[in-house]
Image (tube, rainbow, N blue to C red; front, side, top):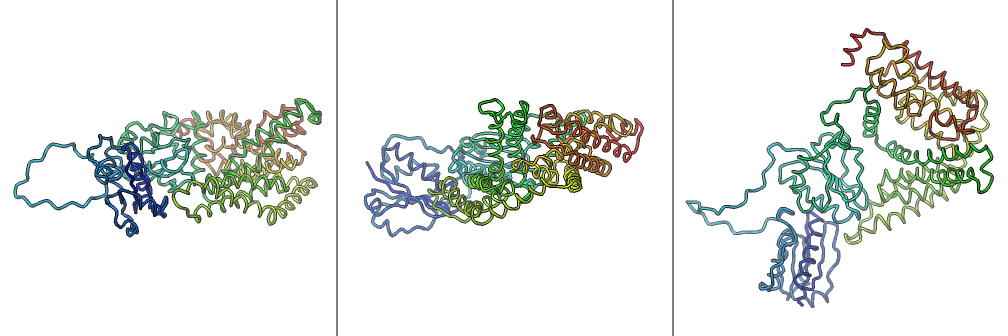
Length: 625
């Protein structure tokens, strides 16, 4: 068996270095050669050849455009090549290097067009006055007449080789076809070359070349084509051509295909989702990271809060009886779900900042915040600490290519977790726990005047932007206090969040001459969203006429929040709207709580009617059109 040593290296592409090495190893195995390959990538050398391996080798293949210490190969039979030839014509290269031209034919691993060849030095042709007839050959791939804009995401389960090789193949194919492309790689160390909202908006098509689940939230209004990394790697041009032909809108929405926006009354839920998606795309910086953490925390808190509320059906102290259903529900909600609230909040704030490497240190920091009594404030601190520590470690630590896979699963989680843990235990944890304890004590001992003022503040915040940053800040504050068994703010926040859509729904029923037919239809849907505590049901009305809708909503919500606090209403469930009112003991002072919601709804509706001018059926119909 002949012994071969090889060096692969591409100055411009780590993917080419890896592809050439893998092709040589696989083809040498089929030909019966013993081979060792050293890789020289942009980030350094891996699998370096030892002196013994070089001394025992029969032949040396240098498939590289990188500088190399060639003195170590003195006296050896050297075959010089390029990474492109090693990928495209691997078997031929190995035979020629070893002098075994009589071996049986072996298929080349790379199909034509998978990877463009680097230019090979060739002698210039002799000048000829009359061009010689050329044999017929396949036409070169057509270049796009009108360049298109493409955005793509590549991701494989391990997030290492195929992720970047597929990205390289798509980049090469798009350039060959005359298109513009940007590829985001969702690798093991997080997202690389991330797509911006502007780039997504300008794209003609989105290609998802992934063997894992990729979130499509960012592409709700774009045509998307999904395939595997293997197909992108082997046939980038075919994937791009197929994408332009077969890409579809996510969810196959009919209105989206025509580019028309649904009327508010016909599809209020769809309009709400569209406006929420636009808001999400505009989030940046710490607010974006906070909202990511909150969005992942809400389902945990809602499930736990409702489980606790259900336990109260059997009596306010029924959970104290061991083995009972009430005790089991309390264990599910209070001891399991609520115990996860702060770690999940912290973990997904860190995840938003540093991607997957930030998740473990964020979860661990959040658990420590819970254990030392720092609560949700400590979770916020640990999430941002873990995220930024993991983010900078990811960028600062440089390892050989064959060790890169250790960064996201070992090195970054370990270092970031230890750093965040020590900071929480010795530096920031105790002060934050003291702040939370003081806040809880103040809320528990509030006077009526202070309670009314806090209710006004939280209630008004819920209606300022109806699901935006101010709304979510008030909601996060109230939800965070549930873990400290402080229930007054939660009741005020939920009641105030229900009144904007309920008030607008009531206004559309009472004063039909102030609303278009579509708005009157939307009012019916807004009523359903309102009783479900989905404040965003008022967004389409506010977006269309903010000056006449938002101020009345703020006044009504602030009044509702103040009344809820004044009446001493407490809510043990963080969501559910009117449906939790029927759960015994989930809400205290249920009658007064319902009265607070009704008063805010009526005030909102009355002010909207006063602010909006009446119109005729003709003018309202023309406005709708």
